[in-house]
Length: 535
Ligand code: TEU
Ligand code: CA
Image (cartoon, rainbow, N blue to C red):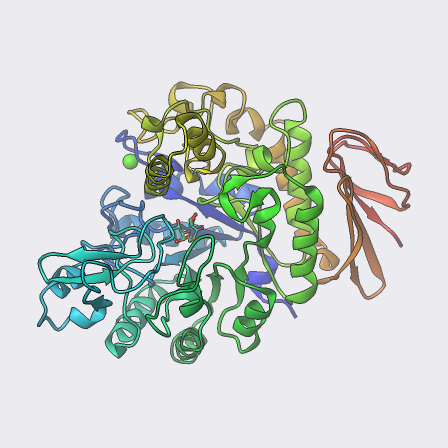
C-alpha cells in the first residue's frame, strides 16, 4: 500500500520569483493563491514552499529570523492561512521548508547569544580562536572559513553557510525543544510535512580540524552523524508520528548507505541525493565538465536499486535549469524538456517539479555580476578573484553554476516582465519570455506544459509507474532504458539523450512518446522518449 506522499506529485515554489500580486517586484503568497487552479489542473498534489518566514534575505529565506512568522514581503499569517485553506479545497497539501541547522544572525536568539552570560549563549557554537586563527580549519559551503569572529564577545561562532547563518548547537537540549514547538505550530495549522534543509549536518561530533579535501574541510566531523540519527528518531517519535505528515531530507554528500540508514528506522520518509547532479560536474559544482548521459543514468540507477523510495528531482532553487544542463536549449528545446519530463515521472519515487520546469524555462541570459543576487555566487566570484582566476573564467563559472539560473521570475506571459510583476522585478527576467511562457503553453496540446500534465496523469492512473520495481536495461551515452514491473505488468522506458537518432531494438505498445508516435519501430529520434507496454 502506497502512502499519499508516494502517490502524489510535488511542485516546489520559490516564492520570491513565483508571482508578484502587489507590484513591489517580489513574489508573494497572494501570487501563489492566484495560480492554485493552474497547479491543480497540472495535477499537482503537494506544494513545497521554500521558506516564507521573516528573513533578512542574506540567503533569501534560508536565514530565518522568526520561525513562526511570515515574511512581510510575502504577506501576512492570514494570507498563509488562506493559502493552506485554498489549497486544501483543491486537495493540494502544503509542505514547508524547515531550516534548523542555522538561524539568521538577526534572530533574537543569536543577537542575545552575543552576550557571554546570556541564556542563549549556548544556542550557538562559540569558541575562542587559536591565537589569531579561527578555532579550527573548517570551510564553509559558500567559500571561505566556517568561523566568524565577533569582537563584541571576543569569540568566534560557527557558520557552515554564510556568516549571517550561525549554526545552532544541538548539544543544548533547549534548541531541540524550540524546534519541536516550531514543528507543532505549523503542523497544527494543517501543514502536511517538511522539507528539512541540510538536515544530515546538524550534529557536530567534534570540533577537531578536518583532514584535507578539495572543498569543505571538516565534513567528516558533522556528516550524517549518530547524534543526527538520535535527533531525527526523537522528532519522529514525539512529533511526526502524531500527525499525518511526511518529511523529505535535503541530505548533502549522502551515500546510498546513509540514505538507507535515515529511511530504515523511519527517521525521514525520503531524501534528496546529489549524485546525479554530478553528471556535468568535476568534484565541485563550480567546475563543469561535458554532460554525460551515461553518468546521469548510472547515478540514477544506483539510487533506484539501492534505496527503496527516492525523492526524484532534476531541478530546484539551488541548481541550474535541467533543459540547459541535461537537454538542449536550442533546436531540441521542446523535445529534450519533454524527455526530461518522461525521465522524472517514470522513475520510482516521489517526483518533485520545480517552478518553471513544466514550461521548459532555461538558465538565465545575464551578462554581468550586477544582475546576480545570490550571496553564494558573489562569495565564490570574490574567492576566485583572490585565487587569481581571470575575469572571463570567473564569469564562466558563475554563469554555468549560479543558483540564480533557477531564480529568475516565472514567465507567465509575453507581456511586460513576463507577467511576473507590474513593478520592477527584484531580479531580471530572462529575455526569452516572449518565446517561453505559460500563457502560450496552457492551451497548446503539444506544449511542454501539456506534456507534463499528460505524464502526471499517466503516473496517477498507473500502479506500475507508482509502485513497480525498477530494472535497468541499457545504460549508454546515447540510450538510457529501464523497466518498471508490477506483478505481470511491464513498462519499458527508452530515452535518447543525444542529437542523433539511435537504434533501440525493443518491442511493445506505445503508451506515450514525446514525438507523438503511435507505433515503435526500434529507432529513437533525437532526444526522443518512449514508454512501451511489453505485455
Ligand atoms: O542547500 C544546501 C547545499 O548544500 C547546496 O545545495 C547549496 O545550495 C550550495 O549550492 C552549496 O554549494 C540548502 C538550501 O537548499 C540552500 O538554498 C541554502 O542556501 C542552504 O541550504 C543553506 O540553508
Ligand atoms: Ca509582492
